Length: 332
Image 1 (spheres, rainbow, N blue to C red):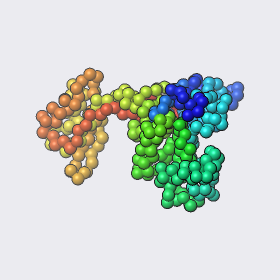
Image 2 (image 1 turned 45 degrees about the vertical axis):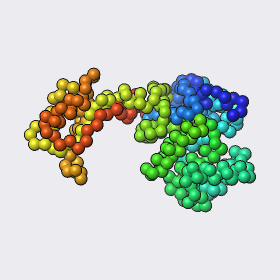
Image 3 (image 1 turned 180 degrees about the horizontal axis):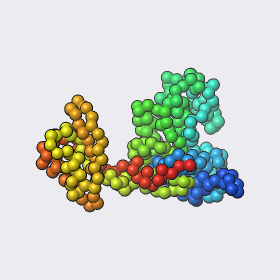
């Protein structure tokens, strides 16, 4: 670390705002966004389309100047010391742009030279980034001929090439298959933990947030509406303490009617029927009344009815439910 690096927060946004246009056409895209990210943290930056995520990321990385407020990386103002900051920052922008006529190998060697990584040091940096992102099979293939997933991996490789202490990624697993997503998410967790990096991950994939992120900031209509851990946010869901049950359709009274009649139940969602190797099953999610032990009540109802239960689980809460409540479907 050099001067300015030894700080508690590797990323700090202070009342960051951005407006476009003037007069009657003036649009406020980001308003007073404030948060910080420390070493080892993976911050999930969430919001509906048009909420201001990409604009905030561009100000953080120096691609857009703020209208007011400031972004600080490793103790230095992004606008005051842009080159110093960019030496310590890895950025994977939306779409992972690259020169289409270059190969991944030539592109990464070019990026290494731009970063001042020459000779053996540059070659080792490229080899390490290639191994991390599993690009060995397409190194000499023109980038324009690669699949969307491989293009994304090339973009990720250039972002981590110089081992930056700060990593900013916009939809890093976009276009990847499930196995590739698993690999990239593991890579993100490992980089945060082992390298002490501060990572900001902008995504609309809530599963990704739960799998990778240690903290979540939610933005809607350009403003921060939540800053917490994924578990704490999910705990505010109306599904916390709900019970989902799958069972063989019994004769007699409908299980839905039985579940709806429970004193501990506030509402029953019918998730439909399905044919499975275990036979025909019907599935319901029962939402609890506040302060009631719903799981015990559902178990007693199942025993009393002689139901053949295939699965029963207690819901910890759902991040997507909280996200909808916080954003109100907001988009711009």
